[in-house]
Image (cartoon, rainbow, N blue to C red):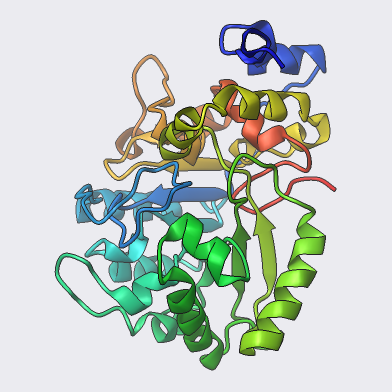
Length: 337
């Protein structure tokens, strides 16, 4: 296909809102049941697909003052049932343990986007050990959601760095040892699959069966659910696509795979995203593109108003095609069959 045909950035087909009009879809917020909080951009890894551009060199951290404001929002808004902690590696924020314990006191369901290897590596700056994390998670009934690009070492290390697969297996064994992945323990361990390269994920149900069979056979490991997440064409992954000359081709794939059923279930309709400095966004991807929620002025946790936010207009752009392609993609995996 000619590059001129592929280059859709300024073409109406690449306008997500035009696609919604075409299918007569109204994607207004349905609820705000999850507060997803990015508490640090620091990470012990620097993965090729990372839309956050996290690395050991990042220093951005959420302050305790902002964390306390998030806790106040959770306390004052019982409609918000879930606290979803992400980063970077969220465990590298010095107030991480405090945030989890205080949210637990509020009877919120706590999810942590845990990269597995931080348990083994510890803090790359302070060298502080994180080997306590599996027990800490179990004590606070945290749902652990962990990226494992594949159940084979070669493909995982290709995307996330040499030695990551081995460390991930070791960390999963530690989580299993305290009850994670066991059906009757109540301790949930979910894995996340991202394709290696410019591809859409395969069937989530099929991949989950393969992961469970291979990880049990080869390592004796258990987990609960597998989530398939499409690589978003922003920041580090977009730069990778552009280096290889495949950005336009990837966008074409996302656009032509638009699924209206998936669009109806996009996560921004039931979630708010908070940046390390307290700014509010429709989702984590909008956050990374600095597309902040406005109400005459940029909204932060310090002027949080549930009624205004539930009635906001969600901000869409071309990257949103990543969430609506095929079976769809959200922080909870595929959206539709």
